[in-house]
Image (cartoon, rainbow, N blue to C red; front, side, top):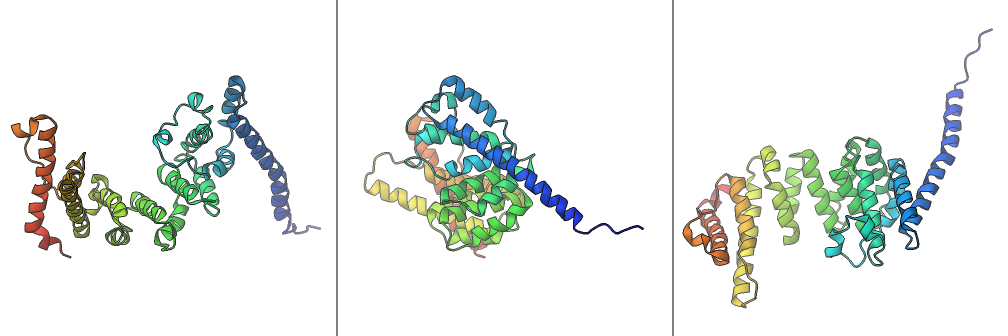
Amino acid sequence: MRTNPSPFRPLAGVILLCLALTPALRAGEDSAAQLLHTLLSPNTSDKEWQLAADSFQKLPADVAIRSLYPEIAEGIPGGWSYAAYNCSDPHRDWRNEAWGRFCIVNWLWCQTVSCGKTHPLVGKTLLELWAHPQSAYGQGVLLSTLDSYAWIPEAEEPVRFLFLDSEAASGLRLQAAICLLHHFGMKYQHDVVTFALFGPREKRDPLFRELASPVHARLSGVDPAVVRLGFGLLLEEMALQQDRFAHRTTGNSFYGEFLVANLLGTYLGHPFTPDRLAKYQQGEQGKETWYRDTAENAFNWWLINKARYAN
């Protein structure tokens, strides 16, 4: 007599498979932890360190990422400095008492996530860690890694939620806004521009550079709100420069306002840079004059044309 197969048989198979995989996963994580301990120990010999590094780089990406992340989330010793940008040679960095630990973890992290564009598991692992970011710096690393190396469609909702969260750290919201522009073009344009217009200068400046960049402008065209944002930054920079000159602050330069004016000219398709006349070729003074005249050309253009960008 034929009997119907039990509906619980497939579920039982899944449970058995999970029970079989769990010890293997734990063994992989234990191995990763041991290798990382060896790599971060100042007492490791050169030969042991190289063998451990080779073995760590052969670990599955998700195991390596989970092992590294608690160290990553600790942040940068002493905050950002020149040393933070110089962690590129593990053979030189790993014995550095103050920076070695950070440098090695950062190097291993970059090596591991670089395959993210072709391995969706990297992005999925980052999103799992997103639920428990451990620190604002740690969440920023997850976000920048998703943005640059491992974007997956499931990341849109948590990134959008972070951007709209008024209680979140402003730096993370800025990072989330730029990430949304990178991956969705115009979809969040209005929200990001509104966020920029009412934010402090340190947020408005990077968002303007992103919104007015040639890559994004090819999608958006000329947005009047972005033009207003840019000229607002230019006027602020010119006022700050006048204040610096009034107080005779050393090292004054028109380069800051030049950068804003030059990007505005590119965005509008109306260059504000003057021709390279002889007076602009006279060393550092000539260069500063060129910077200043570019900003003044942009300012004068705005006085005439700003009504066109009022809405």
